Length: 319
Image (cartoon, rainbow, N blue to C red; front, side, top):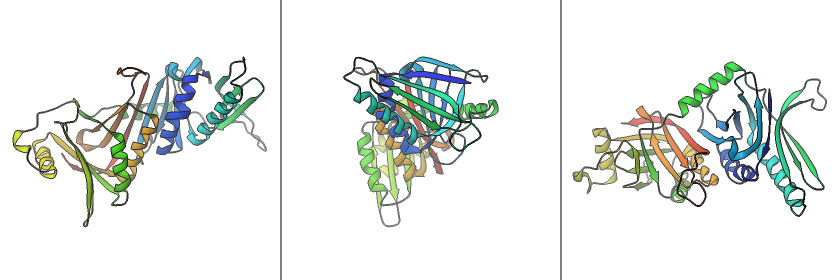
């Protein structure tokens, strides 16, 4: 089982400045899955607790001189602490900055190794980052779990395949900052947020108690997938009445999720997505948030990067 690659300058920026700070907000413990073509950071796919997040990169988006081999179809997966990986990357950036005036290019190599820790008689696996500048070199060993067995890899792949299923209707949210500001206030009101999505482009989020209700409604959003036209007779109704009628017609769904999970999903704004889509899975099994990235300087989707979250449902609600 071998893995070794050079992290590109763009790869360092993507991970250190954008994705690892975002993913760390979901949870420090994470699975890293490496294949011939992709690197994936996976949260909570093998248990039902907490928000699931899936960040996937084509190898060329992060690495060059990429080499991987294993007896499991050249697939390697293990768990690690994202905060340790982020700290190591930041140290690598500091070394690179100290040597930026040098004519010698900096190299950041990442590889899997087995080493004998101090005061131990048994070698342990590590993900090692090695940075070399003009006058300095830094080698950082990040402890990882034992790489997954074939059976464990198959279990992870099954969970990953299931997590890739998209809702039939997705709504594009125009302003994540507005939701970020709203969820900060929601935390002061309650622990459960009700999310309603309709096939004609309505999205509402609301936290309610016996004393107070706080929420926001977004109408006529861009719809991807199954869509319908809003009935004319609903136009002058209030948000609650419209959502109730939509659910009864079958062109709307409502679920309840944890405010804490909802807030964590919004922390993915740190990865600087260009837009976000919300959808409810069939039978209200989860709330899905998909983040889209554009090729810099264009409105074309960057297909080398993907990120989405699945929030567990507390109550399937209606629809």
